[in-house]
Image 1 (cartoon, one colour):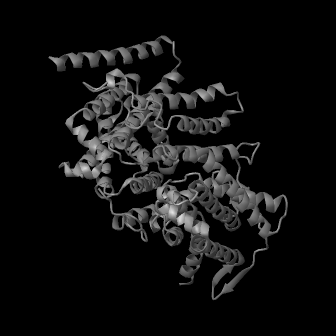
Image 2 (tube, one colour; image 1 turned 90 degrees about the horizontal axis):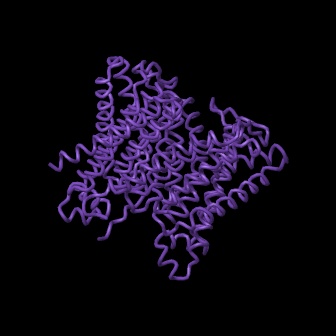
Length: 321
Length: 294
């Protein structure tokens, strides 16, 4: 019974969100440019929830998140371009395949690297990210359709508001319900104190792996959505700076905080685009002078992130206030 | 064979420049456990100071080096005081984010037209280039200058760290900064000094890099910075000879890949080596593993 009620609530929330935004866009209240930005913000939020799971909850310092985003993007785009055409059902399959590809690679990378500790793991994942960028750059030498350094074109524009809202809600749902399960508490205990967790009989490596693989799968799905939003992929979309963007979002929002990650994702994307509009023409390059200053000031004032430990009510677990 | 030795020398040249940057990363990490992302940009500032003092003011080489050292040191100490010191007791990640912020700020602020500008600038040669042909192997006086300056810097660093009072304080703080503070070491001062020392080496590295690869840009610090940091991790972060060893390996691998495979794979190879080494020795080649106490 409770399951049914929750399901109805979730569907209602989805219909309300996706429907109202689509309606506003359809009726011309919101211009298509901003709708696209909103879609991008949702995609970034999905990817950021993934990193939040990896770094915020499982405590695994990953500096290569964009690589998994890219793997998902290229996988989904390739499948869609060669087999999918315009089919919506195939789009869903391609997105899931993108997520699956990222998860598989994450598993293979995780096997050796998750044994490394904090900063060393960060550097290993950073290295993996740079290697993936080099592979994307040279991808046309083994799969010409991927375009390599010239970029991949001819991708169908499939990403719409209902798709991104669906996956965003799904990611929040998965993270929330995982974290508040016994499974999630095991993941948190590994973050808090690995040795103590191990003495309590928790298979720390397995839980780290689950966190890492799930988070990377989110990035893969988000990448697939991204590929079909702009219908163009370039290796520079998945370089080190994109990993840093996501890291900044997660830390600014508050590590291990879903609400913070969500708000920071939207804040970050709208800040980037908003400054483009606000700054007078000819001063747009000031954007990247102002943003770092803002970043430093925010961190100095709120080192624990904007949200700290506070969560939105719908993201709290039962019995936690 | 000549080709191989030639590449070996080219790799050594690159490795020495990486070593100068890697030392700053390794010392700072050794003392405050912070990946100082802004270090690569301090290196860039060093190169630009070199550009201006050589081209605009026509200063002699020694004065160029001194001004780069002074400029970079002041900048790094300033960065440390403004962006890292207030966060010393906050979670580590907070200072990492401010480091990224400082790095982006330095790159984009200096690329404004009113500052250095966004273009690539050719770096003037401060002395006429002479090259010697030695059984088919070309050695230029640029390489000789790089070798001598780097080795001089390394000797000086070794002297400072192991033979002076400040060096002893640095080693004490890196070992345990709380206890070092209790023993009367001025921890803040030592940390500032370490940042300054690392930046001074990066400044020298910037000028040498400009002389060797004569094109500078405000974003030039990013890749060498990242690779130098990787080199420091490769050699065992916090370990000074390790950083030099890592940097030399990095320089060689990069040059050899460009020479024998393809330069498009150049940026990747360094990290492949890094990951392989970390799997074999998780704390780097010369790194010592700390046993965790419960």
